[in-house]
Length: 308
Image 1: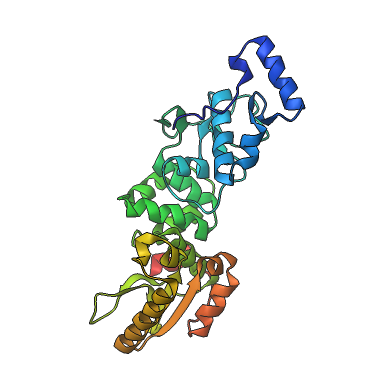
Image 2: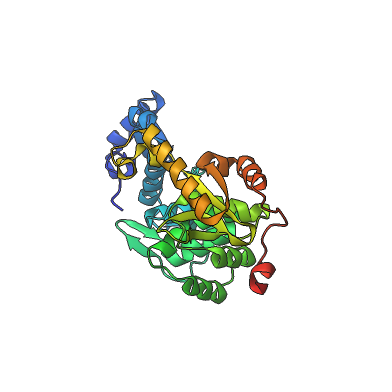
C-alpha cells in the first residue's frame, strides 16, 4: 500500500506553510479529512466512496503511527471483497494509545495475538485474523463474502478454526458458524451474499455450483431433496465483454432461456432466479425461494451444522 501523494500533512511542512493550509481549509479550498490531514476540496468532491475511504485510511496511517488497519479496511488491503465501503476506516490500537480521530473506528486491543503484517507503508492485521474478526462481528451474509473469497484463493477453513480456538474473542460462536458455512466453490460476492441471506432466513443449505447430469452445465445453487435449482443473474452477464462474447443483451437473454429449458428437461427441477439487489434487499429473494417450493424454517445455527 503506497500512501496517497494527494494528501497534505501540515506536520511535514514549515510553520508558515501549516498556517497557510489552515487558512485554505477555512476558505474551503481544502477538505480536512482529520486533524492534521487535508486534501484539495475538488479532489474530495470528485472522489467516489471507495476513494474517499482510502484517502481517510491513508491520512490516519500518516498521522497515527501506532494504528493497525483492521476489519473491513484490512480485508480490502488484503484484496478481499466486502459488502459496500465502510463508513469510516477501521483500525486497532493499543489500549494505552492516545485518542484517535472521530473520523475513524478504533477497536482497542493489546495487539498480543500476533504481530501485524506490513503492506507497503501500512501496518495491517494478518489476513487470517482479519477474517476471524469479520466472522465474529458481521452478519452472516456479509461475513461469507470475504470468507468465500479467501477459500477460493487457497485459504483453509481448518486454519481459521484453529486460530479462532487459540484466541479469546467476543462473538466466537458467530465466527465459528460463519467459518463452517464458508464455501470456496462460490464464484463471486453476489453468490456468497445470496447464500448467506438464504441461511439467515432459514432456508435449507444449498449445494453450490451443482452439476447438471448429462451435460457439462452447472447451476449456482441446488437443493436436490426439493428438486429446485437457483441462479443469480448479475449485470456483468449482459454488460461485461468477458461474459458477453460479442453477443447483444437480447441474444444473451435468449441463450439463458434455452439453457434453463435444457436444464429443466434434464433434471425436472424447478428454477429460481434473482439479482444482486434482490439478495441485498432480502425480501425479493425470500419470495422467489418460496415461490419454487423451498421450505423456510429457523435460521441456521451452530448446533444444526455440528449435528448435520
